[in-house]
Length: 555
Ligand code: NAP
Image (cartoon, rainbow, N blue to C red; front, side):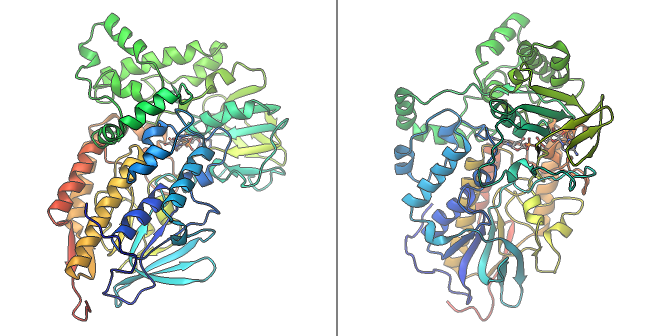
């Protein structure tokens, strides 16, 4: 991509405060600042958090860490940063990832573009002026030509409606709203509602010092081992010597990860002993196991069953009490592997071997009844707690975009538009919302997020560069293009095992929300093919968009 490096505004068509306003100072916000500033735009990024980091500013719960491996969970626009930053381990913790983002912001002098502690409470397209008006919680009003969401696809929490939640006398909060100040939980009795990826990371860490940890589980998960490792000087050297190849691997992988796949073999064609040998050999942590063993694990039910059986057996080996092992282990007949996103584990299963860590089956044995002043009541017992954590998940892909009014050209909000279907063009543009971009919005792939974020931001920047070079004022996402991408995404979705997510409240289909019907939220045709589609779109001059030049345009 060619970009200019001037700092002055390159946008000449409108009298606005900023050429572009972004929301969210995580990976997406920093990528937006880099690429758009490079294209000569004036940019401001707002975030309601007190620091940069996005997900890593909010998810302060003990044990929070990346599930992608560190060396490809990063932005790649600066070769210098790739060489200068050294990760300390395979999966960095929350603080280390946030420190990395601070390092990027420092190094690239991004702070003047970032306004923290500032919630955006409304964004409205002003048709007569062909610009967006953005209002903050403190009543500031800014205008911009391009309005861009970098709010993240897993950021707006799901708060369950359990009776009595306002009665509890101790701290009760969603996992992603873990207090910014230190919360002393040592020696405390902690109740965790939910057993997804967040709980799986949190529980072993809490268990180290808490008096007790009790997990209220509805649906068990296929849990893959993380197998944490420290970064050694040799490994770090190898990574840094091979960054071009690592970045290329991510770009060409179905989930945007630096994995060696496809491997060119299917489990259903492999004899049982050979299958077992390959499964065992690759049991080395991360999602690699799913992609670097066989190519059909997520494609064929028969293959998926073999993978599910293998994982189930591995899980059981680690839990001493067979009754607890039964409760923790799903089976293919319940749901296939990846119909829910499998968590990576840093000692969750072993935690249940300790006397002070308890599992309560709230699906079949004792459903939740209410939260009381002092704890949680199920149909069978009352559990006393000092702290209750709601690890109950997120309104994925659309939640942050629906949490405040984002009002398009015809006056409808995104929330209204997405009432029954979350339609979008390649996860980046929405019809009736001119000059608005979304980074990794609905119907984008679910992949290693920094890879997808950068691919999206490059596409957005190329589109803006075209508009500025040609003196265009407005782009209108075409409704036909939106319908076509939605239909294409749905066609692929029904052919995958992820389509079974509705059976188990999977957030990947929005089936974990009480306020909306489930829907197709993710493009599962392969992140690499999706990145190809973005490239083709840019090369063809963005045929999904209709461009408008206003008569009064001044260039
Ligand atoms: P989640 O996977 O959606 O899990 C939510 C849990 O809360 C589930 O066990 C769910 O039960 C339970 N739950 C929801 N509402 C409930 C209610 N009313 N009563 C009782 N239980 C209820 O959410 P998450 O664990 O926060 O993870 C979400 C996603 O965030 C992950 O899949 C992952 O993509 C991302 N994440 C990433 C990382 C990382 O990469 N490091 C870490 C954490 C999270 P059911 O399953 O029965 O609905």
